[in-house]
Length: 267
Image 1 (cartoon, rainbow, N blue to C red):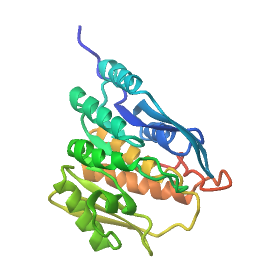
Image 2 (spheres, helix red, strand yellow):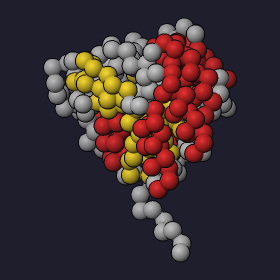
Image 3 (cartoon, helix red, strand yellow):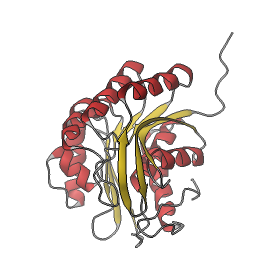
Image 4 (tube, rainbow, N blue to C red):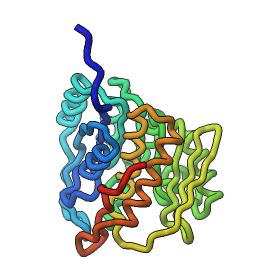
């Protein structure tokens, strides 16, 4: 009997849970839904957090992480997947091995290291594991300026530096790199290098404290686009436009860094 064609592309988030709902698995699933894809998940860590910060982190046992992978891959094979918070070197290595053994396609690596609140979400030993085991599997890596500095060892303080860092990340094994310049002065700038071509996006900066989950949401939107069969630049373009609108229309929830608006329209 032939297997029917899925009505919705399946996409997968491999990340931590955010009890405040603005980042992590929760933000990814909301974004997947907005982009008309069916979201699945592998939860790597459970965090107690809100718009003010992170108060507790519990990493999920490795055997449970593996079981989640196999449950999804065996029955709901994703057309694209993304990683977020991986917390420890053991988790990074386990996730990389499962992605490799399951031959999961269109991997977007969001190298989550520090929360918007400033709380650390990846230990220092795990940075090396991410660099050596996960980056070579990535169709795209999406670091912010701080993460790009850590991964490459280069200064990343200008658009020119961002382009150099993006090239360095592809030399480290990623097929493409999107370096996010949200913390530069002036316009919000994102730089994509796919190994052959570069593209720069510029948007007027929105002055708001409500930016919690922007990196998760952007990478999830790209993942959804890849899952729908769009070329990488098309997927990034739609995601950058979406996150700009999501920040501009943030609902203003919480007393700290509130979430972006996952109800923002999609191109």
